[in-house]
Image (tube, rainbow, N blue to C red; front, side, top):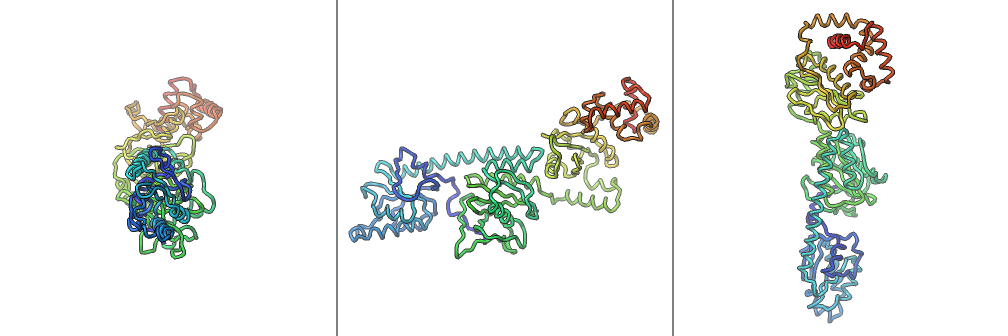
Length: 534
C-alpha cells in the first residue's frame, strides 16, 4: 500500500552537517559516528531529558551538556549501558546528530558516549566551551535561511524557463528537456495507455526506467494498475509540503507497485527509490490518464515544486477541455457527420465571422502536441493537423499575432459559408510568408478594382483568359505564386517547395500557352486579376 503518512520532518530546507562543521566561529568537531557527508540537519533542539524520544520530530541536531547523566550510573560503572539506551532512543526518533557541550558539567566527552554513537551510527559533535547552544541554533537557522533563499531563486528561474519552453513550437518536448535539465535527470510523458510518449534528459537504467513506468500506474486512474516488486512508493496529497521520502520496504509492510484501492481516488503524485534513483510521478489534468514521470540520481530542495510547475504546464498542453464550448464542438462534429450543411452547424461554434490560419513550424514538421499548443496560443481549439501544415479556425475578434518558431498565413474574416475560399486565402498567405521569411502574412482586404466588375463577368473573363493553363493545376498555381512574388524565381521555388529550374520551366510553359509576354506589367496585371477570380 502506498505510504500516505505526513512527512516526519518539517518542510524546511535541510542544512548539510558539513556546512555547520565548516563554520569557524562555532569550532564544532565531529568525534564519532559516520562521515558528515550526506547528513542533513532540519533544525537544532536543546534537551537535557534522559529520554528525548517523545520530544523529537526527526532530523534534529540534539544539543546536550550531559546534565541528565545520573551520577549513580557513573559510580556503579553502568554509564555505558545508560548511554547505549540514550543514543538508541535518539536514533529511533530520527535524530540526525548529537552535539555534546563541554563545561560546566563535563570537561570531556564521555568515552562511553563516543562508543555508543559509533555503535548506533549517530554523528557526535563536540561543542567547545566558548560556543553556546543558542549560537549553534542561530547558525542552523542562518544556513537554513540561505538554503531557503537559494531554493526560491532556483524555483523562480525554473518557472520562467519552463514557461518559456511551453511557448516554443514544440512545447511538450521543450518542457521535458527543461525539466530534465533543472532536476539533473530524466523526464518523460506517459499516455493514458501507459506508453512513453516523449522523454528528455539522461535516461535511467532499465530497472529504474521500468519502475518509473510502473509508478505512473499508481497515480493514473485505473481499476487494475500494473504490479512489480520494488521499493514501496510514497504518495503525496495535493498541496502537501515537500519533504524527504520515509517509505522503506520492511517485513511487516511489504512494498508493492499497486495503485490505490478502487474505493479511493488516485493520488496526485507518488515517489519511489529504485537502484539508487529517485523516481516521481505526477498525474496531469482532470483524470485524462496522462502522467509526468521524473527520475534523478538525487532529490534537491525545490525539485517537487519545479516538477509540479511542469505538470501544470503539461496539463494545459495535453488537456481536453470538458466545457460548454467543448460540448458545442462535439455537437457540431456529430451534425456534420450526419449530413447537416456546414452553414447550419456553424452557429453552434459561437462566432459569426471567422479567420482561417495556416501555420508551419520553422525547421521541423508539425506534430499533434505542437498543433494543440498553437491552437491554444491563437485562442481556438478548432485545429487540424495535416501532413506539413496546421490549420486553425479562429473567431474574427481574436486577431492572430506572430508566434515564435511559426510562419502564419491568415485569411480575411468571412462567414462560415465562405470558409473554403478563406482556406485558399490562408494557404496562399502562408506560401508568401515562407517565401519572404515573414512570421505572419495576412490576406489583403483593402478596397480594390475587383469591386468595379461584377463577379459573374469577372469569373467568365478569368475562365477565358486562363483556359490554356487552368487544365494543369500546377501551372496555374505556379503562375499565381510567381506573380504574387513579383517574378522572383527563388522565392517562388521556396513557396512551392520545388527547384528554381522547375519554376522557370513552368513559367515558360505558361507564357507559351497564353501566348503572352509575362514581362509586360499590363499582362501581369490582367493575369493577376483573372487568377483572383479563377
